[in-house]
Image (cartoon, rainbow, N blue to C red; front, side):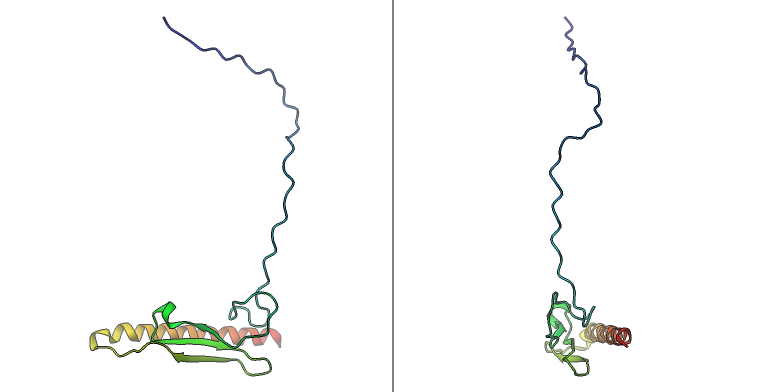
Length: 122
C-alpha cells in the first residue's frame, strides 16, 4: 500500500510588513591613526612619543633592525640598529645579503614616507 503525505497549503497573504527587528547598534569607534607621522607610526589616538618605531630584526629575520624616530621639534631620523650576529659562511652570504637589502629597502620606504609627510605639511 502506497502511503502519501499531504500538506495543506498555508492560506496567508503577504502583508508587506517586516517583523520587528532588533534596532541597529552603533559600531565602536576605531581610534584614529597617528596624524603626526602616518604610515610610520602604528600608535593610535593622541600621543606625542615617536621615539622608537622600529622594524625588529627578529620579526623579519634580518641581521639588523631599522626604524624611525621623530622627536618633537627635531629632524626625523631613519636608523639602523644592531640585530643578531651576522657572521656567515660563504654559502650563507647570499641569504644574509638579501636580508640586508630588504632592511635597506625598508629604510628607503620610511624615508619616502617622511618626505611625503613633510611635503604635505608645507
